Image (cartoon, rainbow, N blue to C red; front, side, top):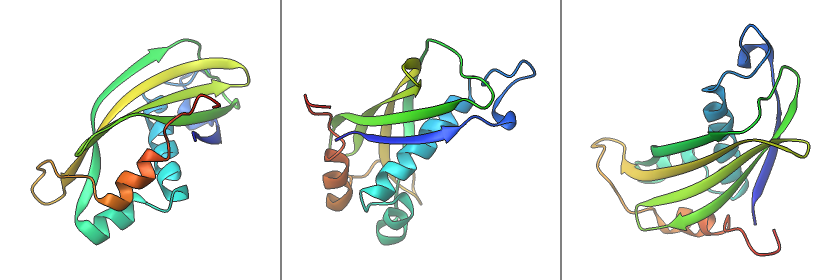
Length: 138
């Protein structure tokens, strides 16, 4: 399955011309990943509380195609591209209607919060992430 969630573009997200500021797409993507994990019953806060582990962004690649504007309704679709022991790669497409605005490829690493060192993704979160794999029917 893929996870999809919608958000409205607010004034705070835009520049003086009413176009979404490029860095705001990262915030939209972060919000969507947080909600995806919460829906999969594996929230980031629970992982931190139970294991002392957290996900951090290791790498991000953004391909901007068309701008979003003030008051647009966008949807962020999140799917898993790769899952390894201590990291994963996700694709997040941000769309407005039929228009693809941005594609983000994001690599997350699992780390121990106190030391900042890499750590294996706990089994519960590994299983939950695996549910985000896009199928041929998606």
